[in-house]
Length: 311
Image (cartoon, rainbow, N blue to C red; front, top):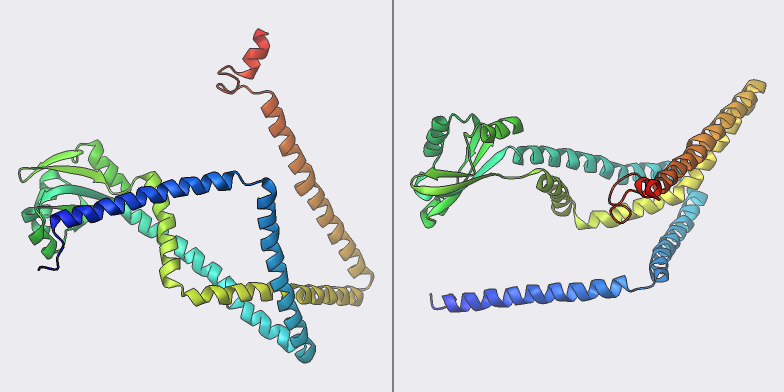
């Protein structure tokens, strides 16, 4: 017991921690000031430097791949394709599954109401269930604190899980639940566990948490190598596709030639109109909207059209 920190020592430790946090915040402010003052060409250099390093790594990978394909030919390409398919495409699948699971976790959290300050002696499943019946609350489950926490704390937090988010909103709308309640002689504060904005941030937090804790650190290096293999392999794959297409076209004679010309002409026209013309028109309309502004608070509090009319 003599090794335990006294109240004065704990207060001093907390004071040092707060001072350290404030100092870190001040230094982060200084860092942001320096970074914001860096010239534009510095950031261009950083981007080009990263691109340069990626190109060097891709060139080294391509040199190794050319040597392997030179010695083993098509079987090497097939093995490399299998290697690639087992890495980053599988990660994309895992990422989609992670987002889907995080959405389920999010949906569960948004159906929870937290009750703060409930007397520890009433934080049992039976007492909370009795309270829900008295308030006519239809809840899916009740989450109470563990027994050791109830023994060491005067008040605890209890969570009520509703069946749907609509049931939760209806409970507050009909005043079955109010922001403040009397429970066992104590004033209990009641609030939804998570709002819309916090839920969106929580979705990203849950997703990042699973990728940080579930995916081994060594996986990222292997996935990076897989991406470099993919970049270097594409020239061999595209050349193979072109060779196969030319062979098929020649075997079909005039029909193959006409089909190829028609398909290429159609794709060229699609790119011309879908990418070029429509992109130009969208920017043109955006510029026209800006020069004929009608929204308030855009020109000294006066819409531009109104200012032009008064002039």
